[in-house]
Image (cartoon, rainbow, N blue to C red):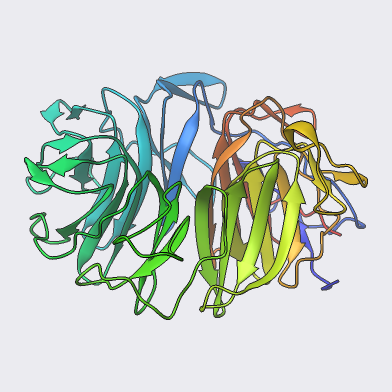
Length: 388
């Protein structure tokens, strides 16, 4: 097991010198004063030192005060403080991404900051809705990603501006115009979109992309044309919730018979698989560790599961969150959540050495922590150090 120490500062609002000692391992993360939310967090993304948050909440709690935030909010990643950014959406936000031009939000909303926007909007760092990305979208977006000069959208989409799009669409990142060329045919819901240097990965419930066999659940397509990249073939058989790419490996969070997390090479060949007793809904890689989030309560000791994913050959208790090595070995780090749904989203920031988890839980390791938590690496001033 890699000798590393992790801190867990759950949206900390403390002075930079408040905690400096490293505690003996293993130590479970303990909540600290934090930003929390009164409804489910469905999406998080970093833009520099700011974490943008989307979901079904209507307020945030900071320093004991409830502050209105309608489904969109911003948090200072270093202090955990709630920021003034407050565009507000009139219905749930399911996906977020950002680049130097702004924050891209997708969901089932019809207005952002009082401006009409149908399921997709581009928002500035001041909270102003930009004039681009004004479209009529049939269906619900569940995933959004930016790269190659485009913004890629996935979900249950059937059309954009009256033009057929089958569960995926792309837009010019600058002008917001619908891309006429990128239009892969996906035969069921897309839950994850991941931009790579030479590909765009799609993950979801679908069985085929562009009617090709071997493209079920995960497919790689060309960033400009949407054609299937024949260098990748999927061996996944259950719905994919999330994807992460790191060090030439693709990681997937999966459901089906409990849940799975798998690592595969860039040809789609599985290298290892972790089995859980509930869906793995989020996955992220940070500093040589793969983090899993979902609504599981245990990580199984084998792939042998029974009814509703019950681990038949024993298990290790990991409630809603778990960490594994790059080779698939379960780590002793525990940040146990609660509830049924658990963790919906994980985002990692290498520059800050930080992981953010959002979901529907209301506690971490038995301590109140509603739906939003930050985890930070050691040697970062201002955070409580814990480790293994």
